[in-house]
Picture 1 (tube, rainbow, N blue to C red):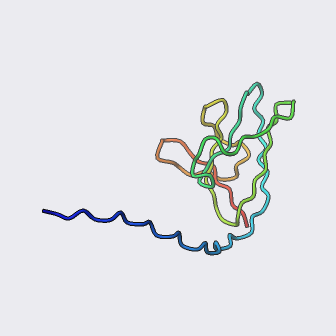
Picture 2: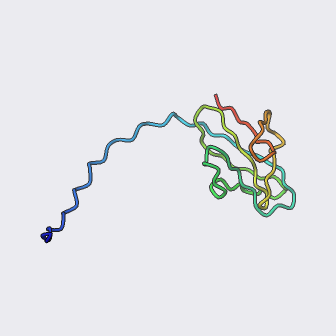
Picture 3: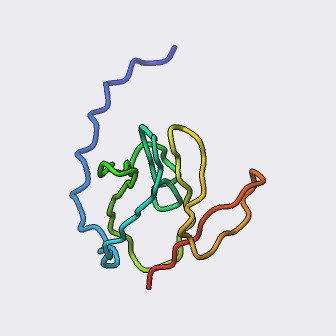
Length: 109
């Protein structure tokens, strides 16, 4: 017959360590014309393709703007306008994606 064991006291949490410093980000402004849109979102590999993190703000004349800090590198992104995927017409470069469309490419130096 097995003997009952005493409950094990959980170990104390490990002391916090300093996080590795991220490369300094640079402000990047997205500006999109979307007349009549109710919502414009920028998503990409810089948000792990989350559809709710970078909402742009409408300025009243159909232009939507938003600024975020991005470290130097190359990023793929798309726009979501009222829930529909769209290309950024200002993107200088695009690459094919697995869904039969293209992602916009943004290079930050």
